[in-house]
Image 1 (cartoon, one colour):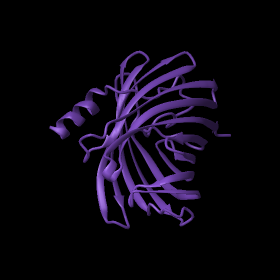
Image 2 (cartoon, rainbow, N blue to C red):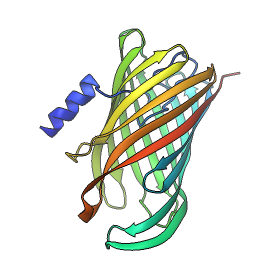
Image 3 (cartoon, rainbow, N blue to C red):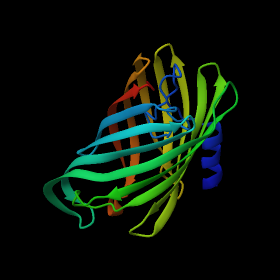
Image 4 (cartoon, rainbow, N blue to C red):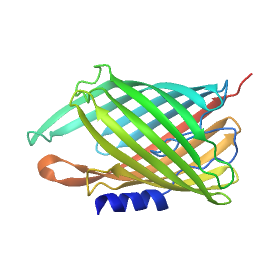
Length: 255
């Protein structure tokens, strides 16, 4: 029942994600979904976001993308975090401490199998390795993931799609599947999204977010995003938290 429900969510995409208003920028922002399209041959692109996760966590992420070919790109980036802890969820005791630093650096490659054209869907794959560099004192370990991305036009500026993600945590030798599912709408220079995402192995994990983007010019896009997620805190059980993010995508065209 769980798998059937998630597949229906994925196929019919009852959540939403960003849609480009021009072909000048292919970005993954805002939201959790990875776009199936590449940046284009000779194009460099910077994607940056800073977010607040309740309770008391600030994250920032940077991704630099470069198109070696029209359908193939490499990308690299890093993630950092500042977190204030007032509760030890493992030992059920109250504490007062903070942690900060770079959590991971990441290296990846993306291939656009099929370019979206009218009602022909866009299909892409990406593989990424996330290296734990040991700067964050509560380590989450190194891991890698493989992403299948789909983007499909419904009517005019309305699109659906999503990701199926296989992720492996190297230290724990543990693998699992995640998903995203979206529906997007664009109007002139604005994009609107609502998105659902979660872990396929957790029945109760259905998270969502909503975002708005504005394409300032053909090479710059600004976005904001808000969402809620469910986290299982051991003996405390599932708890709901909110998160918000603001981001920027900047494209450097081929000379």
